[in-house]
Length: 382
Image (cartoon, rainbow, N blue to C red):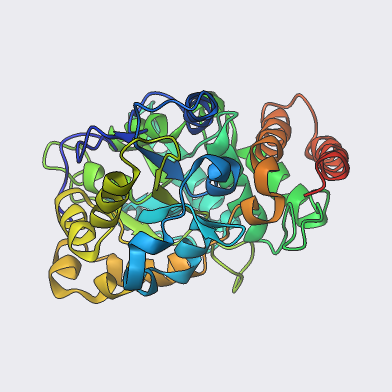
C-alpha cells in the first residue's frame, strides 16, 4: 500500500465538510446538526459517518435522480446505510471495518501464532509484553484500542460482543444489551486495562492508539484500515514489521467480525447549488475516483469490482481479504433505531466506559444500559 503523508485528512475539495482529524465523530455530528438546523447555505456537501444518514435525512436531498446506474456498483451492505425511508440521502465514499494489527517481528521472535480468539490475544500480548519489558523496553504494552467514551468505544464494544454471538439492539429494534455474551465481553475488556493495555487506553481514540503502536511500543492494535499505510510509511519505526488480519473470535471456530464503518457524501437541502453539488458527489464517489483515492491514500472502495482490480491489489495486497470482511461486518444499529441512534450509542459507550474504568461491574453497567435502552425505545418509539 502506498503511504500518505498525513492522517485521515483529505483535500479533495473545500466544499466537503467534516475532514478535521481533531473533533470526535460525536462533536462533528453535533456541529452538522447545528448548521443544518439553521438552514445554512454556505456548505453544499457534508461528509457523513455511515450511521448518520437517518439522523440527518430531513436536511438532505434525494440523490437517486443523480446517481443513475452507478448505484448497482456499490457493496449492498454499504449502500443500505445511505438510504433513509426510501430515499437515497447520501452516496458511499469509502468503506471501513475494524481490524487487528500485529507486530510480525515480535510474533516471530517469540514463536507465537496470530491469535484467533480474544483469550489467545490476551495470553500472547501478556507474554510478549512481559518478555520485552524484561529485555529493557519498559514502555511495551500488549494491546491498544479505542477506550475513550465516544463513538469509537461503541464500535469496539460491538466487536467484542458480536464475536461472542451477542448483540446490543436486535434487527427488530428490541434492546438486548443485558446478555451473557455482552457481560463476558465487557468483563474481559475491563480486565485488559492496566494489564495488557495502558491505563490511558480509557482516553484513547484512533490516533492515540496508532501513535503508541507505531512508536513500536505495542504488540497488537485494533484500528481501521487507514492505519496500515501510516504504520508502513518509510519513516515509521515499525515499517515492514506490521501485519493485519480480522479481529479475533470469542471462541475457537467462532465468528471474527469488525464493526462496519466508512463515510458517505450528502448534499444539503439548503444549498443554492444543489444540482452542482450532487454532480460533485457523484464524481467523488465514482469508480475512477475511488480507485485514485485507494492508490494515493489507501481509502477502501465501496465499489465491489475494485477489490479485484490488479493495480489496486498490487498496491494494497490485503484488499483481497478486505471485501468479505466488509460484507460480513457487524453494523451499528442505526437502521433499527433511526433518529435515536446518537442517544443509543451515547448510552452504550457511557455504560461500557463505566465498566472499563471500574466505576461499575460489567453486570451492573449492562443492566443499567438495558433499562436505559428500554426507556428510550418506549419514549422514542423507534
